[in-house]
Image (cartoon, rainbow, N blue to C red):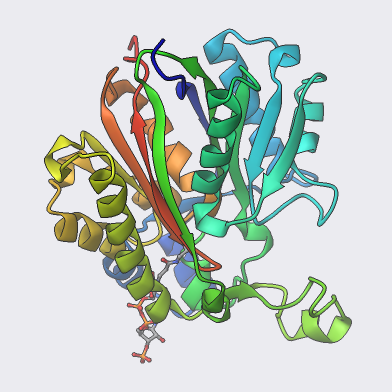
Length: 333
Ligand code: UT7
């Protein structure tokens, strides 16, 4: 019998309806549409503004779409892995809240915190449960309400991030399609360049650190930029090499959407044509764990069964990596 892989049998995405444009940001901080567009490629992002709505609510929308698209009943889901750095609460986790809200009563879940690489870490972990025959219906969701940790008086970060969620259903397949291989990496020394200083066990929340804005995202952009390009290019090459594939054999490169200049540099260094690179950063900005599945969701109609797809990401930690997928289905639309 041929090897069982975890095939992606459905993709879903959700973005909140409220749009925050560059023109809006011009009124909030000392910036311009021209600076944001040329330095990042972002024109607008979505913000979850409804009171009482959180990261899990976006995740629940994704789970419900996945159930509908794959003809799955809520009680058939066995495992949900949720990638997020903006959990509803520090504990309990967000995965089990999503399962509860969607009525998936026979599943268990857990969260993975790997920032912008969270979806890759979660997908790789989830695929093992399917490959080994442990579970047959596993959901992976990347969801982040970045607006809950962004300082809208800091022009270096507030222009970048947006809210959103995306996810995939994984099921066993024996036709060679599925999650084939991943190269995942981390370097904890990178934490100084991208982090949230207060609110954890190192610096528990105090009125003083809240007043000092230490519970917001901090980023030293330049070193992150450089490490992101190197990390993504290196791991794309590694995952291709160990699967005896060349760049020309990639049908789609799906890069984390952090900065259009990073995406372009990665594409140029790999010498992959721009039309094979999925991009939607102009509409949603950096949605952290959600960027990769949001790209798959938007480009789903263009994907064909058997396509060779490489996902690549870099984020806080530092964390980074690349995942090779052979696509399972051609969209009916
Ligand atoms: O997703 C997780 C991983 N994250 C990333 O991959 C992000 C990586 N980093 C980046 O995308 C870029 O470094 C940023 C977009 C964050 C910043 O772009 P940059 O080209 O690296 O700009 P910079 O930080 O070097 O700043 C250049 C200038 C500075 O002014 P001076 O010191 O030259 O006078 C900044 O103060 O641009 C200024 N600046 C701005 N000006 C207008 C910074 N932010 C803004 C702004 N509007 N929003």
